[in-house]
Length: 169
Ligand code: RP5
Image 1 (cartoon, rainbow, N blue to C red):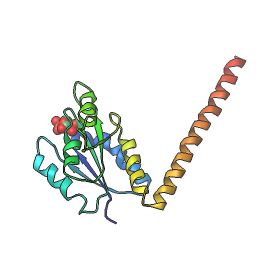
Image 2 (cartoon, rainbow, N blue to C red; image 1 turned 30 degrees about the horizontal axis):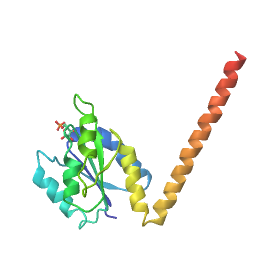
Image 3 (cartoon, rainbow, N blue to C red; image 1 turned 90 degrees about the vertical axis):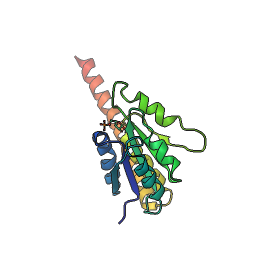
């Protein structure tokens, strides 16, 4: 089955962050194609990848970049597919530069901007987008939310046990 998610990173140095997105997608049974492409160092490739993405069958693009992170915005300029931007914590400003560069898009060209290094949420949002037309993914998302709630309940039970033990001391 062809991948419906395309991940584009500004550099191989972004890969350690984006590995978490690949794993989160895999947890939902989704594969992604992954490409390195820089808005500044390979701008023609950025245009080519984004402009041809829908025709290749992709339904959502995850774009990760650090520093002056113009890659997600440039990709969004060249496609009508949803683009999810992940600011990467590279360089002396630790991703705050990338966050502002990605989030402050002009009207008409949105990029769904995640937290700094927010690769997991980027993957979950991609699954949520795909699940609008996929009942199996929607069911998996419901199960995922159930597991999140169960984890909170477990933390509460463990906290109460700990408090009770501390009161006995
Ligand atoms: C950005 O510059 C990349 O997305 C990366 O986060 C950062 C550093 O790139 P390299 O110098 O490691 O290639 O374009």
